[in-house]
Amino acid sequence: NAGVTQTPKFQVLKTGQSMTLQCAQDMNHEYMSWYRQDPGMGLRLIHYSVGAGITDQGEVPNGYNVSRSTTEDFPLRLLSAAPSQTSVYFCASSYGAGGGGYTFGSGTRLTVV
Amino acid sequence: AQSVAQPEDQVNVAEGNPLTVKCTYSVSGNPYLFWYVQYPNRGLQFLLKYITGDNLVKGSYGFEAEFNKSQTSFHLKKPSALVSDSALYFCAVRDGGTNAGKSTFGDGTTLTVKP
Image 1 (cartoon, each protein chain N blue to C red):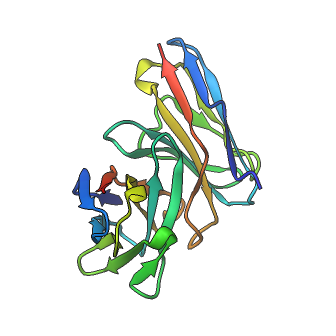
Image 2 (cartoon, rainbow over the protein chains, first blue to last red; image 1 turned 180 degrees about the horizontal axis):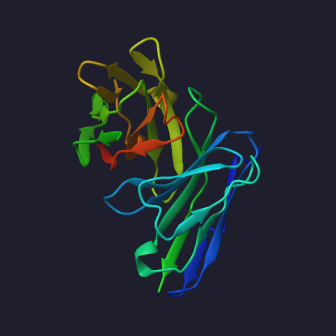
């Protein structure tokens, strides 16, 4: 099993560019989430989903969009990149309520110049 | 709103000594609690969870955690630390009721185990 696959691993964007971070899981997990990790600030939730067709905002959703058209995929779109979005992004998935802990992807290191 | 506090940015212990990494939480419904570990330049790995049942839960690599409802705490423990345990540790909470899909993480605690 591949688990949670994130692509790309590294990306450099210019301010104002848009891009999509891909996330796919092959464990039939209901829950999927996107987090960003910044030094000294832990993991902050951007968006999350409890199933196909259902998404909701986390703590820091501004500047990001998500969709969940299938159980497997949960892409994160940066609409117009800003230097403040320089971060490491993690996608995670888990079974539904009461289930196991998250399985995390290996992360995407994004730099916006 | 749910929240997690990890009051110590850094914990230093000598190899062979017991270790504790502290976590307190706030959630309106039943708490689902988790610990994760992040080794340098790597992703996060699940260590253990508390959903219901025994207050002492055991997880990977010899770690355990004690759930204390009255103190709203979920401290991570290990009887004998190893140098290889040095890493960044995160506590997380999920509301088992209405917001079950949303997990909130603490800011993390860096554990350093010295030989």
